Length: 287
Image 1: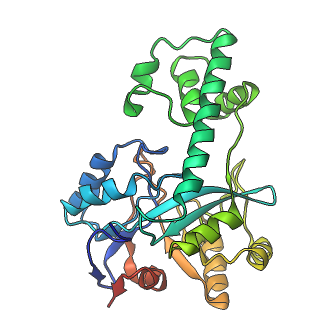
Image 2: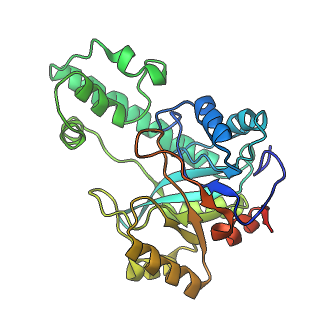
């Protein structure tokens, strides 16, 4: 395989989405369902960027090739920089021959170990989940990610909202597991990929807001290639500020829906010309 499953040249108004998830990470749909949807909706190129998973990309590209849908190899890495969270979108590596695999396998393994430890602690505290296999049916009935414990709590009526379930799984031992951002960017660059900060303008709890000053500090230490400018949670004001920033510093920019295939988080068609410089860095011509 390669960074693209099929060669592609796009027109400036071609429809792309460079940020979405399947149930290989925290999306709702399996890969086949998402690919079928994207093909039926007429997308011209996408990138499926499941959290910390590069081992699934080749299979997704094969599914998409049957629909003549170009899929750019991509991943959203959970990283840490000086105690600050920073999700990193990496694009354009060979999904079967890259230096990100060891990092992702370590993160996923540690996350899964912690997920099962939290589950055991919840059971020890007297919670029971008789409908576990049904609730986690999309995962084959098994725990896959930390959020699954929160989902079990909600679906069994122990809590009414995500924030309460998050507090409870933290009390049961949940901890955030991330890779080092500098090591991740280095591995991605050695793999021929580019790295962009995902949704830098998110301000919700647990997310780090990367304003202009913080971006300057980050770039002084780590050679990121750009930022995700267009994201559903970015206000028009922050989009404008980020556009000025990337143009001033000659950075790449990306456009993504961050789709999880749930109402309000479905894929979005962005014009290819907006991310032209990024696309051309990963062998996608826009003309």
